Image (tube, rainbow, N blue to C red; front, side):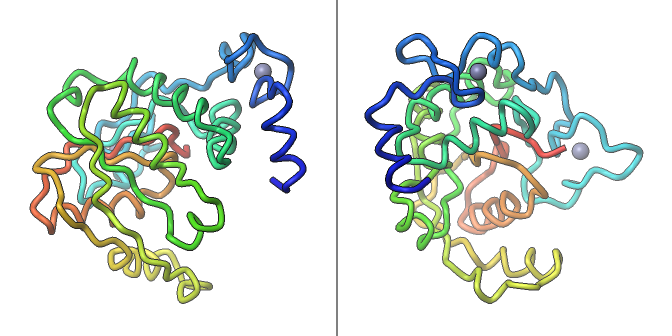
Length: 222
Ligand SMILES: [Zn+2]
Ligand SMILES: [Zn+2]
């Protein structure tokens, strides 16, 4: 978003984040986009995919035993994730956290602390905002769980250009450092794509002595 668009977003009533029609004050989605939310009704408890299409579970060797997301990463959910990336989108984080909190499976409603997967430092500086951090904060508030931002992510993206998925995954393991971790954690990210980032974050937590109860995300790439 450029400076002018950002200014407009601040001074003008923003309307629906998906279709941009005017909405009631404080509403971030219109009624028709709310109805169009791509809910995932059930998924593999390990990788959150609704189906493996006869392939093995992609999270079979992941450092987390459970993964869950309320939405498919498409349509209105994709628009919410995009809107979350801007500073003016804190109410969006709260709406997304509400979708997660209201549907979180009962076994995950334990005593775990919320640990957001942090954005790379340079990107956070540029944007002045950490999307998964904002989502984690809103979710911690809704679930009345402690928020423990104990992960740090180093910026190594420059060295990864052109690297294959396996190489990125290897490099990814080194990207996170964990400090003052809780005994039990729910990892939180905005999107679960290949799972490599959540895996790397879970590995850093596990190495620091934390049990990762689950890798939560708002939306799962199908
Ligand atoms: Zn709409
Ligand atoms: Zn699976």
